[in-house]
Amino acid sequence: MTCGVDSQVEVRTEFTSDERARFEADGFVVVRGLADHDLRTRMLAVTRDNLARLVEPLEFEADLQYPGAPEGRSAVGGRTVRRLKQAHSRDFVFTEWLQLPGLLNRLRQILGETVVCPLAHHNCIMTKEPAYSSDTGWHQDVRYWSFETPELVNAWLALGEECVDNGCLQVIPGTHRMTFERNRFDEELFFRTDLPENQNLIERRQYVELQPGDVLFFHARLFHSATRNRTDQTKYSVVFTFRGAGNGPNPGSRSASLPELILH
Image (cartoon, rainbow, N blue to C red; front, side, top):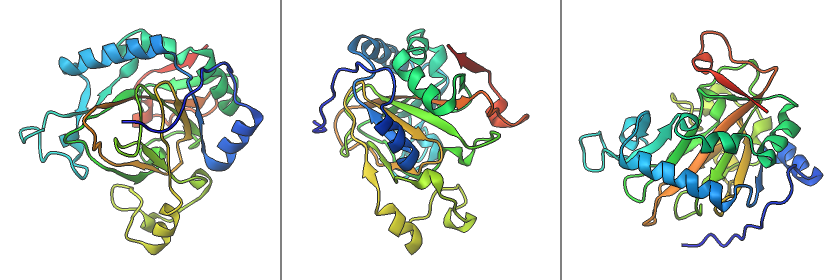
């Protein structure tokens, strides 16, 4: 399997002016080779060990019932893990990742000098298995989040290759700056694919293919989706969410249910 994308060794620790402009306009930008081989190797070791032992907390594909998922945990493939939750608490290597200058400095350029990592959202390792993985519909991550404003940023780290065949992310550029009426979403707040006005927007999709160590930075309001993994190898991705100091979670909400990390 090959994505046809070459990653260069990461040397910069900040976005270029062009990258900043593209993030503002499109809602996403990819930085190649941000996480080095040693960091990825240690993350993968923890991930594979925790998967083998089914270390809680975790989420099974059957839990969400997305298209392609097993009908239940007792069905064939029902113990297929979708993601390992609470990644930060699984090993110190994830703290190392959050403190990496190349990651933190870029987040500061978007969010301000003080960057906060909410542990209630994402904070996970996505584990898209070659069998019984599912399709994730078009959505914005802020659909179930509750902060003063929706200005949050996700950092999606590829631990291996991410291609169309194994279900890489798809994004619709510029949708982080758009507003939509409620009737353009279904009851679970997925963007409806049966509406012509939505279909016209979805046709603008871009596939984000990544090599190991690449990071996709994307706005939490950006529409994104993914198909199931049609290869014979598991796809692993580490995902964290970040906010600025002045954009706190609303009291009593799920977003305020766990501690947060102030990153230095």
